[in-house]
Image (cartoon, rainbow, N blue to C red):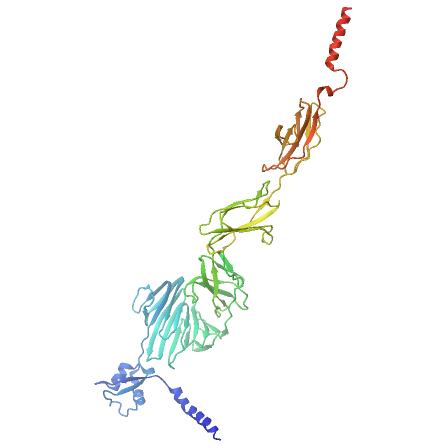
Length: 559
């Protein structure tokens, strides 16, 4: 029994103190000076001076008009007239303008300036944004193409704040520190609704039709319109059409993950595709130079089946964030930042030779490469493959210092090649476009038929070669063709020569020449023989017969 007494005592104390805890509020001490009166102090300090009896009651003044110099009065903060509670401009990007209360002209918004009640901020253009920060840590991020007015910004005591923003058009993201004072209030008014919160993080937007959309990241938001309220919890959003009550809260869509994000992008422009999110009508993606996304450089709204096309960015590290948008236009939860690394330089070199789809005609079967020098490259990397995908690489040469290279002999076939540049730190940038070339074999040597030397001319014929546009014919008295007697090009696969007068063996050969003047090898030599005159015909020579015949004729005439 004795062990239960402390527990019961503790419970009793908690029960007794709960009303006190619930009724606690911030109290401000006011020191009385000569000539002060309760009613006079109420007119000076209270928002509603007629509530001076409440001050008397809190201070147990039986005779309210009797207060003396040196005494202290306790005043609840909730009754005090609010003091100005300015916000500080902590970030500006692009064309952000401000118009102060009572002014008609817009001027450029500056970092660190204080904005008070009555100021209007406008961000014009896709690259314009601004950030307002209050001393309690509350942050208002104003997105591009947005107009926001500070309708109220006051503070009572140390903990009670009252702030009211009017979003005429555009979109803001509000991160409100949880209020310490029970009377603190932060409201965002639009032409169609009011979003009231105490401590939360949420997004508010207004489109051209004055439709309001509110999406809650953390905490709770009460969305009010036409005397109707909709409570939005974390991960929920709702839409309010002008002149209508808020629609029911719906669950926000999750963010789409990028499925084609590379560890480093070596060329630009490039595309990024995203996974499919059920119920998403569009995706919103933004790329910034900072993880807080204060400096958005590229942003777009795309369809789920489209890709985000990124262009115009320099080498560096960037961050991307994505979100889904449903059919009502409610933007879902934002993804965590994804790193986007871009390093295009040094750029791929421009190839001079061989030209794309070139036909290489070389007896040595070697190929000479040359390209333009890249200013920030220290070496080059060349790859030659038998397929366009470079799965069958036959030459892989890195560290080439000069913008040229001669290959070893290659086979007669088609090859593909690409080049990239290497930086001082060893980084190799993107490959050049894949190009091809073909090492073309020379046309085959045409087989020569046996020369026909039966007539007064020598007739030499050979087989026609399909790829030949002409032929090279040679005749010599030696099989090594050191002493060429006839050397000519002909179109037809034959040649007729005057029969040589000098007896001996003669050798002939031919080669084929294609339409690019690429000559193949000579054929195996064929030979024919020119015999001496004495061996050409057996019996008495014709000249001797003529002499004898003439002598006999003279003898007969003499008789």
